[in-house]
Length: 155
Image (cartoon, rainbow, N blue to C red; front, side, top):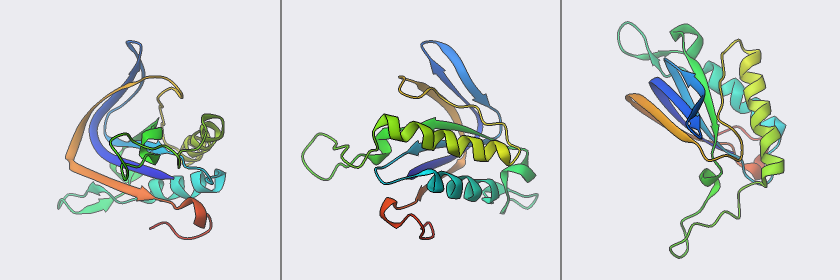
């Protein structure tokens, strides 16, 4: 599983002109589910996200997690994160999980974040989406949970 996290002042995702998810301060989480990922990856990722201190305190240091900063999460599935640009000119998506396998994993991530008390609007799975955001910082992180090492700590 690969996550791209962007700290935002605000963000919204639309499908066919309809806004389906919106947050003010928080993190946009783009989720790429890879073959071999499971619900345990989603739970570990959500726990990491809930406690991640990427918001500035009064001194501007990254000491606050989303709850302390009053932030929420906007989760958007993005299979292209599992793509590879290693060969040729066209991306390969061999590592990407099939949509039928990926959707419940993304749903488990969202459910776990909600269990932590966050509002978690989402995009729409298997739909073409438009994402608009104001990146705060900019602060952007890539978080990988290797599929072959399901029980190993995330790097």
